[in-house]
Length: 565
Image (spheres, one colour):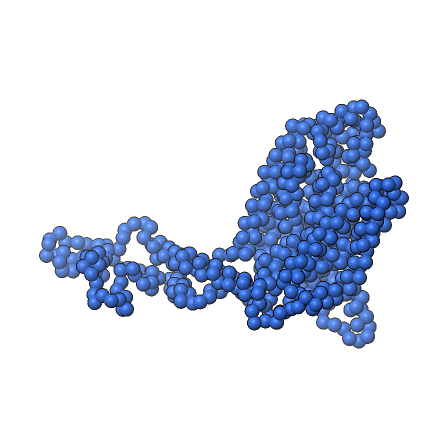
């Protein structure tokens, strides 16, 4: 309690009694009104003497927000000094890592040699000129059916080394750009095959096959790829540790990406459809142009929101907040925090999250020159786009001749194209290990488990899928986020399974076989799944009314380019 005598004499001699004042870390900070020992003035000025009260005249404020004063001051110091220093230190590290001063310069000849010898799959690049020749030579004439099969096979085999080259090039570039940006490049390069296939399918307006391929890519990255990795690595190790700094965030982003595809399905289920029968007797539930316009508008808005979620997550990963919590009420921790802030002001560099991993990357020598690495990634991306175009050119003929359903072809066959290189590497590893064990020289077991599949699925659901929708909007293609119900349910199940399997950050061969078995279950039902009739005319790159008019004139759904079996 504060007491004050009203008499003048009491006010001049110890008549103001201050309440006990708790210690605040602000007391460690230099006051703006305090005299510096190096000041040119002999003493404080008259203004400073009048404005600065003596300690006995300081009265504890009675405001309810006064206890927060000692908490908010360190936050202002952290925000004011650390953010600027971290930005400068990060820019200096980025430039130093890219230019590599004082380290051995990797020449062009050495880089080309390492590119040529990095994997035995490079021998499959011989099929790349074959694919070009089969596609461009005498194109436009009546072509034999065997030519489509040969184009499909050559493109398939040529994509395998290109996919590994893109992934390996991203790993090498991480030495020059840091671990966080390097991981983003690796994930993007790993999704390059699927993204190229999706863009080519969008350009040809094969939207149903495109949607099935998108779901199939996510299923493969969540079930098949980690399942095989867990089984191969878990055969010699009881538990493999899944190392990921942001595994919890990846789970949240994956759930959001999957749930965002359920909302359009629920919305479309409430729309009234018109039943239409074609000349072959096939019945389909049709949505009108206005209903399709509603779905397209909602899908494009949803795509923008998903992109902002992905960008914000990458911003958090690249520029995370400080690991210490400045809002901690513990007085001792606040003292240590303030001392560290004061010490950081005079420091030349400030450490940031991920420093250990950055130092680990800096210790390893890259195998290619940084400028040649940029050229390598650009050339590989261009070649992947061409191979994807060759592959899509022959898929319809291969699917029809092989009597393969469109759902199974999109969910299973096309996504395996990108996984074929990893599967080949896995088989080579198993054969090599068996041979060494047979010779009595067993190699040390390797860790195959990782959260890379989740990161790939997150990028494809939150980035590539919205980008494809927006590109379709710009190009006049009616690409929406309304997917087949069976496909969405399968992806939801895969999301639930992988989040439960990786929740403890441990993997073994039993979990891997469970993932692989669930993928096989989906494939068995997808092989005979006919597709949802509600989506039949949504694939038409034109007016639904015009397509219905053609059906009324006697055309079948297959004649107008939809629903062909």
